[in-house]
Length: 223
Image (tube, rainbow, N blue to C red):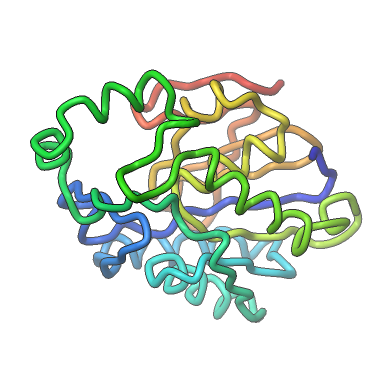
């Protein structure tokens, strides 16, 4: 599904549960002061080449981030529940330690096959990818193939953004499940290539041809 139009992939700002290392999924927690600052930094950073559309998850943490960016860009937010985070089911609101007590082998099974293994009463990567398939067809469509139009911005969540990245760059599932997106990193996808930049300044310095893993290692997938 490679396109030529520039697409900004933005994760919501840091939340209270991010800080406490609790899984959110379909549940929500408010942005921290740092999270609001990250959203404001994203808004300021995109002023030089602002998006013409801002697409967002309906979950509060993403919508709050999108609203801050939209106010600076002067465009409305188009929210869609299909951009919501992967549903963690019964694990939502729990820490890793609590998950291990409830399901001692779950993280090990998911580590072997995150694409297919579902969270208890929740989703797998594959389930979320099916949601995104219809979203890409219904909402993005031909918008991605037009070079001379202003960028699109999508404000979502770590896992859902990485699954979308896989669709946009035609990555295989084993690569997608290795990717991550910290709250302070924006990805820019353009012409089948991906750059990333760290928030914090009014001007982003784009680093070409890389995606950043959660561990802060750099994974080269496009050049």
